[in-house]
Image (cartoon, rainbow, N blue to C red):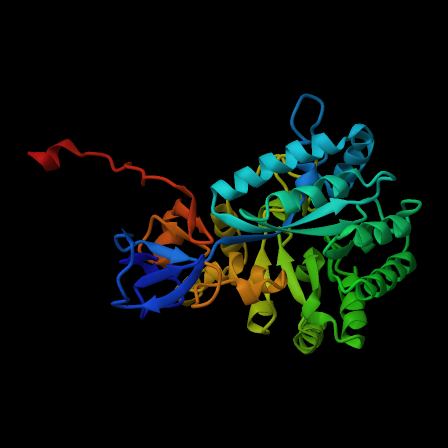
Length: 416
């Protein structure tokens, strides 16, 4: 057995010790039984591993190199540049990119990733590579794969068949991008078919939904209606929903009531959508965020995600969920002290619920012993200081541990 002592545990303020046996949490509390190994955390902040529920591992680092810049900085140029360049993609290239991206995220404390995989490719190159990698890396990271028709369910010839094949291969989630179809009618029909296909394969749903600044974009309403009819809301996620941040308040309030009833989930990508959205605005300039606070207060699960790392849509990113959280809470005005104390839910528990891994997630007796240690004393200090992850533990063993940085500046006159 192992015992971690002097821990400040997120969401469990009455406990300071963690006991691990056979790769699982045996007990959380005070004055727990002796163990073979005792690790003193010296009051540091412990929480479940970070969750990144929206990433594109097959695109990682595709935007690096001369001539790869997305000049307009828009979603649509990014799609076109990817379409032009993916024709030479190989399974080995996808594998190498994905491993680099996973390494980046693992080193920052992430242990759960949902990745969208482009299936608008007659060879399903990305899906083949990532199905294999999901199995190979299952002991160190939980990967979920979304069958994602990047170039459109109807707009790309044969995408429906490719989606079917990808789900047969073992994709966990059916994806879509209705706002990229050539008409509203085709966008609606794409959602109908994707929802039916997901239910056929007992897969979850995660749609790139209304990722634009158009307040009249209504695919979120359509998606919510479809999954409400089939009682599939808890298994469904609307990603981005940028336009919902621009709609008129009376419409938003009507929809919030329907979202509460359906229990649909939401993912916001603060850094990427702040980069992509508002490109057609002068001032005021929209920043691409959905109604994060309102959805949280509504009882819906909302998670933040990285989305991209140095690809055609976003030139930055390194898998650091603390950076994503920091940007997201500022853009959402989620900075009241009471909100800061629960803000880590946005990159931990909410993402786990969206991925439906919550039964095996969290610092509770009987669950897998997965957690991270931050160089801070509590959630407020961790966020204010943008605390570094000092250790990541998976099934009771370290994935990594590092010494805290010594970066305080000496002031000479104070030593006299």
